[in-house]
Amino acid sequence: MVTALVFGTVILWGNSHCFVSPAKAIDPYQRVSGTGQTATGSSGFFSGVQRIGDSLFSGPSYQVAAVPPQLNAPATIPSPVVGSPVIQGGPVYNSIGGFDPLFPGLRSQIDTRLYFRGEYLLWDATGMGTPALVTTSPNGTGQSVAAVLGQPSTSTLFGASDLNDGSASGFLFGGGLWITPQQTAAIEGEYFQLSEENDRYRGSSGGDVILGRPYFDLSSGQEAAELISFPGAFGGDISVDSSSELRSFLLNARIALCNHGMHCVQCGERDHTDWIIGYRNIRLRDSLQINENYNSIGTAPSLALSRSDSFRTTNEFQGLQLGFIHRILLNRAWLESSMRVALGNNEQTLQISGNTTRTQSGVTDTFDGGLYALRSNSGTHKRDEFAMIPELGLRFGYRLTDRLHASIGYSVLYLPNVARASEQIDRDLNSGLIPEETNPLIGPLRPQVLWVHSDYLAHGVHFGGELHF
Image (cartoon, rainbow, N blue to C red; front, side, top):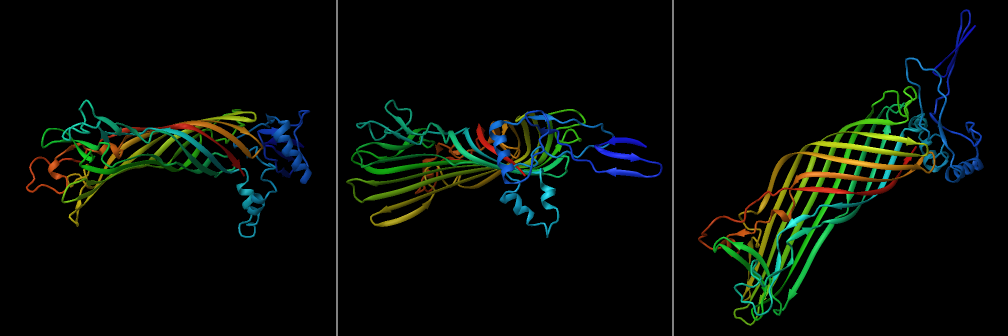
């Protein structure tokens, strides 16, 4: 009789019969006891408590298991998370077993192959450039030059800087399912969103402080300002609100570089490298809203005027995502690096609108157009731009238990040539277009749609964990 060991299966050849004994699946990172023997453990509640304590406090080690000789096919290698006390026997794991009558073997099919990821994000993001929006001058300045840019006494109260820059918090959820037991192919998804960033300004005066909105008057060929407050003439208020928001989701396939599976036993490698290919959607949305109100002081007939300007941009990218993920195993810890590049179309949408309401001698009139948003640039405008969006990531993880991992990482996401709301303001105006419009109009149709582009960079740290079923 001849005895052979193939793929962990004992095969006995006699004179005319062959007996095959099923092999036990190999775990390349078996937990070992203090004496160096493989820990088999026992069942029951107290055993589970003991195993939790071992995992959290005594720190059982992991070693590469002895591997029998291999032939032409890969061995079935379950993940080292099998038998974790966090999920095994718990309400989540048991609830999956409740579907057995409808889907026989569901729990055994997804065990060690289903995983989820959740993280808190703390990122910095690039702001959007903004021209000077509110200016002032000291009392005693002549009305014709008050709040006008370029004058020695004029100062900027709001604008002439980046808006919505700085830190923003957010969240990330992801997960996937290994299609093959050898963990050579998976389908996974990911969604993250940064909280809305805001900047705002509020200013008001009964006429004791000069407030104005600067622009360049093409009719006269020089800087000018619309006064909201001026001593003895006007009193009013102005508000400026801006917002920026970023979100992304993806769905991709994940394919192991080595087709022998995760923690490749045949190759003797402890590292794991996967190629990724799939769909990526990224949306960056900005808005800028300016509202002003002013009333004449001590003049007849009385005049009350309200204006509003609104600029909104949306950059929505859709395309193909390619990249790789590389994970290095360090006993109870792991280090993961990733590089992803998305190629596709960035649909840019620009919405500009304005409104003016004038009440004089008890009669109210409403006009389209404000100050920066006039009939020459108002409306919804769209254009498509090809984009290549790279993203780099680095994560360090630690096994709290066999199934639960804690992680900390850093990511960088770069969006080139995006349209931002406040950067679309054209300061060059034909003052004859400001409501109520001059008839007949003389001069160019300005402001116009500029389609100014800039680059957007979001980067920062993230904290969270992974849960393996």
